[in-house]
Amino acid sequence: MFLADLHVHSTFSDGQLNIPELVDFYGQRGFGAIAVTDHIVEHRAFLGKAARHLNLCLTPATFPLYRAILRSEADRAWREYKMVVITGFELSKNSWLNHRSAHILGLGVKEFMAADGDIKDLARAVRAQGALAIAAHPVSTGKFEPQTFHLWSRREELRHEFDAWEVASGAKWSVEVEASGLPLIASSDLHRPGQINSWKTVFTCDRSQDAIFDAIKTQNLSFTFYQEPAVDSLKWIRKPRASRVGSRPRHGFVGNLAYS
Image (cartoon, rainbow, N blue to C red):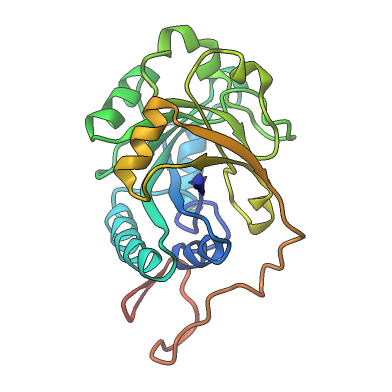
């Protein structure tokens, strides 16, 4: 039995921790799996253009580096913590209107894809990669922030286009998603360390990506609320080794090469 958090953000988009820091943060807490799911935004939309200008999203130029760091850190995570690290992204269709906004997680992705287009086509394109398509926070998160209600308003039409729907994305459990009969998953949508206190998915399968994906598809899983005392954002940070020279990079390390 192990805990998984399959909706986590790094400094490749709008997270506070780089990928090596995320690995240590979760590995030191005994998690069995995480998915790093940084944002990909629409190319033409104003909010997408703003996110790209501020370097708050993955792009075709940064995605190969993102994948390379995740591959390297997945190897280290398994060696040091027996933790599975899954490459993901979050296709983010953001509008000024909550009912027009929608986010789709792709878990186990191999290629960059744009967030432009209809939701149904995007979900199918994610699954065509052999990845899982997850409906992210489809109802109110309970926080004062932009909401993404478009998927929920189309849930009957999209019922079979997604492998799971987030019944919790953070600390708020959604009774309406639970009662929907849709396949479920729960994650933190972590952007900063303090958000670790949230609902998590519990697996009893083998610690491998294939086994985790099968458990999601068959709904052989359960949920628990993970809570710990206030997180000191400095105390757990992975220290640079002696062979690493210079300041800690924004995106992390592969081997002894620092990337920014």
